[in-house]
Image 1: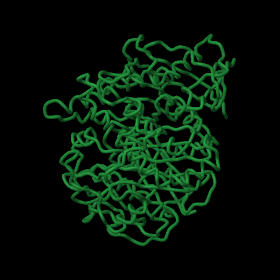
Image 2: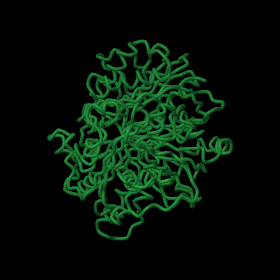
Image 3: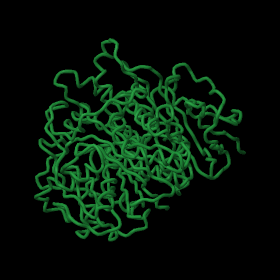
Length: 239
Length: 382
């Protein structure tokens, strides 16, 4: 049970250009934030509509709809200070999950978690909990958009979706939960623009899943805590 | 599923600083809502003046974390016992919140734009995890900790996550709760949606005009084993897939969450002694919920809405109302639904208007949110 198998995955980074997010109908897509389109992009590239229906969804984000939030804060100090109702409803952390559900008609389990630099750990534990509780498959989605001015520290955004299940299949990659480890190896360097992104360990995980990547006996999912412990996984290859 | 004991619980909101004060005020029919201009010229359910955090946590001192610390104090002795019993690394923290520290960002925003120096740090003040970190520090807990953030269902869903952590043997005790704090952004946002009542909110009333926003914190300590008056019996979650800020009008998403919670608890609707409804006081929300309740429970199950007294605690509403269910079960008495009279005659449900004695073993609390996120939680006497 401590191993989850990655059946399919997809990473979006800014270098790929604006997310096409074809999973969203055009009218809905035009109203969606970048974060929601990033999520729709990686989900659409990982599972088709029929497969999505079989998945419970766990979204993880450090700052959620932060660009929309900054937009609302700016509206508050301008003119009459009135807010856009659509922007406000779209400012909640679960907006990407809500948009996804509406577009795909997904009425199964769905949750959104936020835990700063521990968000990837939270998503992994939620996925383990849901699979242990009987979900066939979990779609784990990690996404943070670029941090907008005037907030600091600035960082680039990226999104990762992983289709996870308890059974190995041809081509799946096993990711074994190692729990909390002392003296976990340092993370591989992430691009400078992602160093303040709370999800940077998800970027490292994506690198380890890439075809041809070496197995990772111990990959940290978070920075060390006050005692030098960090939750880790092992990324194992399967034929 | 296992029925995990709720070995300690706490509440802090406009009705009182601790669980005893809150339930006494509620059963006495008192309202915590007030017309305060400190936030905006609208009715709110505000906490009494909050103490700063202890010096060791001063770098995370915000209105949000102050509320968390006050509410946490109610379960602190039991948590100390649990960390000794299970080991600190086996004690997890799961908190539902929708605002996090956005109030601090709001206060600092002008300075940030102008580039003037201000004591504001995105990670320590704005980020939701700051609330979890403060609770972990106060608790001495070293297990995993995170926030559920699905708007107004956040802290109801936190119970589902906590239960799965225990089921999967990833923790032995979970501090589960909800915390949200008043801020201009939420008040103005709900006003922009034309969902805020001009006076105190009136859930299920014929003349209801919208919500009143409140703030507060609520915590429960769930343990693998232990003595408790009340246990967590089942959690159900569903998604409307209908609209970002309006519920499915036929109440089917709400009914799906309640049905799933009953199934998880292994109970029939008739075994639920009363329901603490989401009951926010909006025209569409209450109507959809009343349809779902009528379909599942008919007129046989008393329904209470407590937001007329506490306000809508948003991300903290779910945990607050689960704990109110537990306290009502313990006392054999449910509060009245402040502001509900006269009740909307189109609702085919039994809305409790004034405090009522009850004899039952189980209660259900429901929560619904933006993004069509629904959750229901069943608790029962041990």
